[in-house]
Length: 82
Image (cartoon, rainbow, N blue to C red; front, side, top):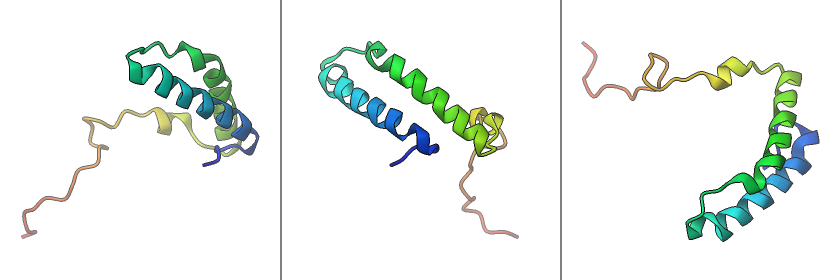
C-alpha cells in the first residue's frame, strides 16, 4: 500500500523493510528495543504529516481519543425500538 503522500512512498518502503526485519529478527526472539528503525520512522512520520497538511487533514481529528467517550463506536442495541 502506498503512503498518503506520493513523495513519502520511498520512505515508507524503507521503514516497512526495516520494521519487518526488526520484527522477525529481534521482536519475535524477545527483544523489544525498537530503536533500530526509529530514525527512518521519524523521517517518514514528518513526511506523512506534511502530506496531511497538503491534503487539509486536521491533526486533531487523527489524534482524538475516542475510547471511553461518546464518540466511541457503539454496536446497535439488541432491544427493538418501541
